[in-house]
Image (cartoon, rainbow, N blue to C red; front, side, top):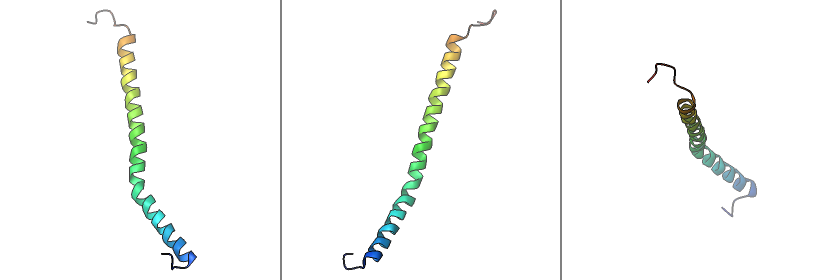
Length: 62
């Protein structure tokens, strides 16, 4: 690679960077959405737990 002109080397490096970004794009998206799904799940479970434990039972309910 050293014997290539400078602009050719930069072009090759740019192409390699693009390939890295394209290959890693799916995992980045999944990681980001996975984190949000986890956060939402925790909030839903926490909210349900609070609702069940804090609200009073209606008269006549077991």
